[in-house]
Length: 260
Image 1 (cartoon, rainbow, N blue to C red):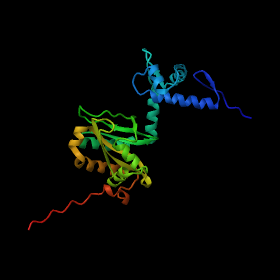
Image 2 (cartoon, rainbow, N blue to C red):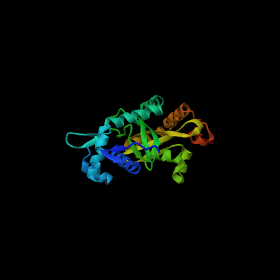
Image 3 (cartoon, helix red, strand yellow):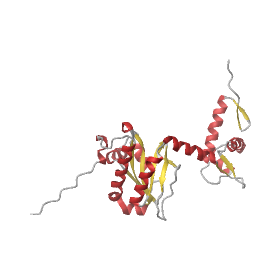
Image 4 (tube, rainbow, N blue to C red):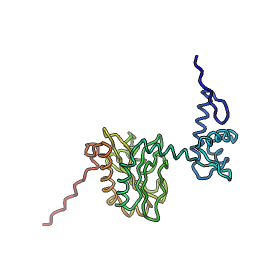
């Protein structure tokens, strides 16, 4: 019978069962490194792991470049995480298609624009173009936010089959808006992007300080948002004229009453 090779993590010999558990714990540590400087006490509190366990696993993560230990003893993510992120972007191969469109949206509305994709229970900023204005919202490529809040979260949920009145409205209108959901001082509008077979690819989003987004309003934001959402949908192989996407089509203006 063929024997499986020994696995060592943190200098400890693992069998298959304990190896899986150790990997789960190591990934939990990476998820907990959400700030630039994280102490061992912070990690213990966030992960629920003993400090001795943390130190053993962190040694392996350090050796492979996933974690860095600063001179003051604090921990942060290592360069290997950035490398994996760049590989993800390369394999998705959307940057050269999406970024020019985001730049046009930013130029038109003077606010930041993002392209979100679904990752399990999260929405991830795959691409981002910042506003040139001094005061702007803080969103970076690679940021992960919950699917349950924010305009892009509503859009991604709605077109992934979520049920309920809110999502029915999003599917009918073909966009969603949020004001102060993720952060009380920011707001956003988002629309879906579709690919081959009119399957959801992601969401295009424009966001900024709440007072400026509210000043622009849906009347100024939604038309360019729709224009570039349709453009990207065509680029990814979708059909923006499909009957299911009727909300994207120009709506007839109400007729003016003729004076007698």
